[in-house]
Image 1 (spheres, rainbow, N blue to C red):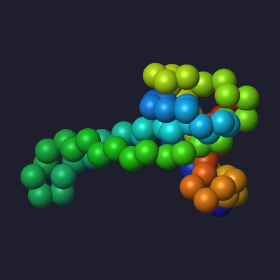
Image 2 (image 1 turned 120 degrees about the vertical axis):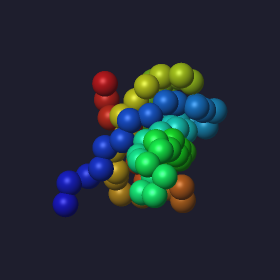
Image 3 (image 1 turned 90 degrees about the horizontal axis):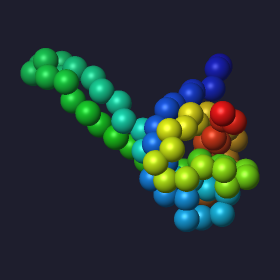
Length: 76
C-alpha cells in the first residue's frame, strides 16, 4: 500500500529533529452542504533541523521513530 503524503504548515520546531505540522482539510458537510475546515497536528521527523515555523512542508508516513512520531518530512 502506498504511503500517505500530507501538506501542512510547521507550527513548532522546539524539539531536536522534530517539527509539529498543522494539516488542514476541507470537506463539504453531508447534510448542511457547508464547507468545513478541520485541522490536525502531526509530529514529523526532521533529520537536519532544516525547517522553521511558518514553512510549508510535505510529510510522509513512516515506521514509528518515537512514541509520537510516525511521519517524516520529505526533502524539498
